[in-house]
Amino acid sequence: MSLSKLWDGLNESFDCLSSHFHSLSPNTQKFVITSAGLVTAYFATHCVKDYLHKQRLHEIVEKRQTERNESLRRADEFSRKITEARRNQISNMDFDTLLAALKSGEVKPTEALHTYQWKALQAHKRTNCITLFIKEADDWALQLEKSPPEPRPPLYGMPMSLKECVPVKGYDVTRGYVNECFMPSERDCVMVEQIKALGGIPFVQTNVPQCLLAYSCYNPIYGTTNHQDHKDRTSGGSSGGESALIGAGGSLLGIGGDVGGSIRFPCHFCGIAGIKPSHIRFSHRGVQGSVPGRPLINASDGPMAPDVHTCVEFLKATWSSHFIHERDPYTAPVTWNDKHFTKGNHFTIGYYLDDGWFTPTPALQRAVLESKKILESQGHVLVPFKPPRIKEAIAMFIGAVSVDGGRYLLEHIGNDLMDPRYKSLLGLYKLPFFIQDILRFLVQPIYPRLAHALTAMPRNTSELRKKYEAIEQYRYEYIEEMQKLGLDAILCPVTVTPAPHHEVPVKLFAVVSYTGVFNLLDFAAGTVPVTQVTKADDDALAGYPTIDPWYRLAKETTKGAIGLSVGVQVAAPPFREEVVLRIMQDLENHHKHTDY
Ligand SMILES: CCCCCC/C=C\CCCCCCCC(=O)NCCO
Image 1 (cartoon, rainbow, N blue to C red):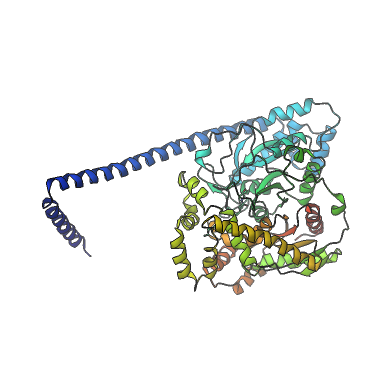
Image 2: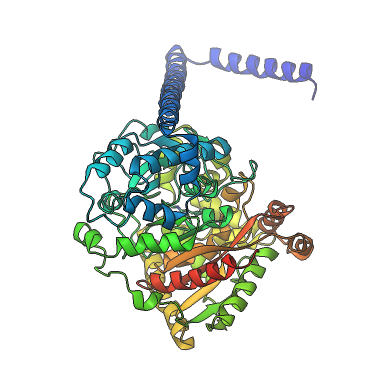
């Protein structure tokens, strides 16, 4: 239609409306004018309010960015308090060497801190992983130096990084929401109390995705964190600031959090190790999750590090006493069980390459097959395992994390500045249930997996109760399958792809079946790097399924990923963290002696 025709049409309609209006009685005309005025005033007020609110949020971001720049500048100044030669010397120490040097007095806590402030800044330049440095760290290091030489606590003077949502007194837990800036925590969470009691020095906070419910890492306050070697790929999430920092050498030990893979995705993407202990063994007290109030799918905090050995040392120290249980009696008083971790222990391990819901890309399957062979050569028994009803489990997972049909998330992001990359995910949550039903019906023939995911959201408390009942049943069904085969642990892919491009994870949430199932079960689950994507893996992608948009996206983002790190996942029932770590350590020890 030409513009002039459109204009003529509009004029005609206006004339028609105007003649109708003049044929109305004076009172009705008054009524129409008043109503139109009120509606316009309502919308105008709404627009102005919204505009002012957004303005205020932009000002908050600006203020926080200024504060962040100052924090980075200050850390840079402090990091120059030691000579370059000394810094290089400390920089080259691994976790054990540095800890021994700290304990013997050969390295002072302030020297270790200044070295890691500098290393973290270098990592930040590559990845944009830091939110704020913790300025009190310098005083804590000095206090430790002044403490009597004996006994030295287990992590004496070790600098540690923290995912931004782990509360430290005086620092925000924004979860990427601008609205939650400048609301500092009033106290340390139990985890931070524990770290300090062990002699560790929390020195820096790291970036997260807005709302925490994503395995990518960007938000409107601190921007996008990228993989240490690939600017266009994500470092993972939600503990993606941690993985980028550690992957780039800016920290030897950090704390992440995981409700659906947020420790395991980033570790796998960035080539580092990490473990999500079962929720009932490791305190989450005081830590703000993505959607609080989900009884059957809880987040766990856990260590992330360049290697498994460091995670082991941290957890051994943490579980050497009842410190956590005394402060958080909802965790079980179970201390470190060295019997389960003893070198040479042989376990029966169920393994799978494909969970039947989402086939992993070739390198991720090869990683499991190769790990199976390594573990067999070390005396473990590997048994094929088919995880029960994963298709139902993914729906249970989505339902359990979106416990209120997505309302909490919509209210939080809807009232905040939003990175546009979240639009597609929020779009799904925004759809009224009857539209979800229509969409489900329409996409069923071409996109049956999305149709299935659209059945996941509980619509009322009765459906929610049924979800919880199903999860309780599923837990025992899974355990029973393991018991039938006499399994101690499970070996499987971490996910479907190596580190994807930034915009992929929010669209590709279905791959969470590999990690989310162990949150549903509250198992201990960890990730260890075992290989890298090869040219042969890239070539083998040609045969990868393309039957729906999720498969096509997974294939597309994996193309050309040669050299990217690939991990495997090891999991075991609650209180068997030591078994998981033993298996991960056996894999790591093998790779230490071979160049993969
Ligand atoms: C109709 C379908 C709506 C889509 C629902 C998407 C639901 C789940 C996606 C989960 C992605 C989870 C990534 C990891 C999150 C995590 O572990 N966060 C830690 C928070 O402490």
